[in-house]
Length: 422
Image 1 (cartoon, rainbow, N blue to C red):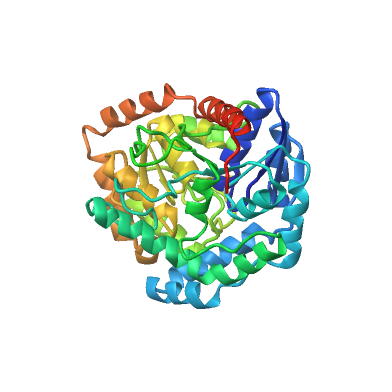
Image 2 (image 1 turned 90 degrees about the vertical axis):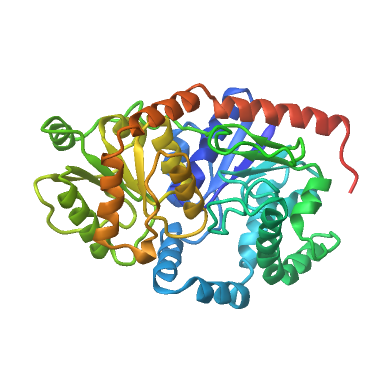
């Protein structure tokens, strides 16, 4: 089949989609991956054809998002979301439509493709590294709630956030749907419509980390994490190798694609927490890495694949993104999380709930004392290593990419035999 996978956001958003694309290509499908040009080396490095989307620089997007996260309260961010949202540029929408023409199936975490594929009469598969559909089993992933509110309370959180995103977008989305020759959607939004169209939802996380709710339809599959082998051809710098061999296992600090608006402050808190707990550290350079002189007990490194580095460290301090959380779980490494926004809080809370991570320290409230307390708590936990090993074993027994490919091919076969009526 001629497949198109479209993915944008941070590397943690894009890399799982690349892993799935590689799995689909290995299964004999013709796959192209469309994304921002910043991810062209990642995609082509996996042996996949790259197609450029009309997208803003993701570094600039992340910088703006994180500046707002740290500088404004949740209520102010909510106000901006409701009253300052803008539709995508017409050129971006036109590019998305152009890319979908002639495809057998489109797969993407971007909801715009739900409407485009409906207009073109082709199946759509929604991808996500976190749960997006309503359920009575747990609250919405953006609710910041780390405990269940009961069946109806959980359901209400999903209804609230679904409407929170749909109401500001409803006018422009329905205007665009009319331009595409489609009927407008009602107040319930696109997700119920997607279920009627029998859209396949593939969730790229482990059911051992968050079990699949029984109230989801069969077209929703929790497959396991989608890991991409980024360590096979990696050669560390002599300086990094020498540092790792010169003393006890360090704590790695990795924030990936985040662009912190105050990197010097972040770095100061990290260094003070390491010093207070007597730990060595490896600070990985990302899109928003700090600068300046480091103590002899801390080594700054350029990009290093986490699958290569994590087996060599004692713990990881990260933002709670889906990608870094998955890698920490697979490696059996304890996490101290500093979530910024969105699903990072969800995964950070989940790591703590599973007993493989400290209680999250939100970036907006970060200080050296809180970070020190979180890190020291992990170091003092005598049963932590046993919990980490068990979780690592469970995830190591999964093959999320293969499970996703099988679910996709089974869904396509059923879809072709009996196309949905909408």
